[in-house]
Length: 104
Image 1 (cartoon, rainbow, N blue to C red):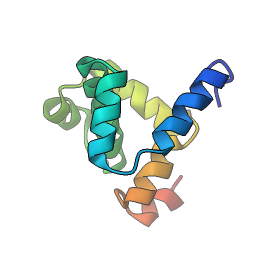
Image 2 (cartoon, rainbow, N blue to C red; image 1 turned 90 degrees about the vertical axis):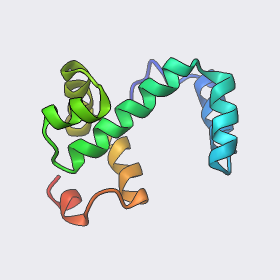
Image 3 (cartoon, helix red, strand yellow; image 1 turned 180 degrees about the vertical axis):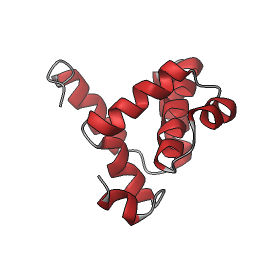
């Protein structure tokens, strides 16, 4: 965990996010919290992570998401050397097969 982001303010925001119960509540909260471009950037990174875990090529990911190869590489680095946050969520969502998790 990056200690630089572990602050009372970030804790407070994450507790607020955990209170959201529906996708519509998420839309309302995140539209108030973030710019449209910030939301789109976050969702793009998550799509990139999903596609990387599905073993898609950088070319296909770039074509389908519009992400740059630099963004794809950054997400891939997080998947391989990060805190396993993407994998935690993707597992819970059933977005990649259990054999993918065993290969880690």
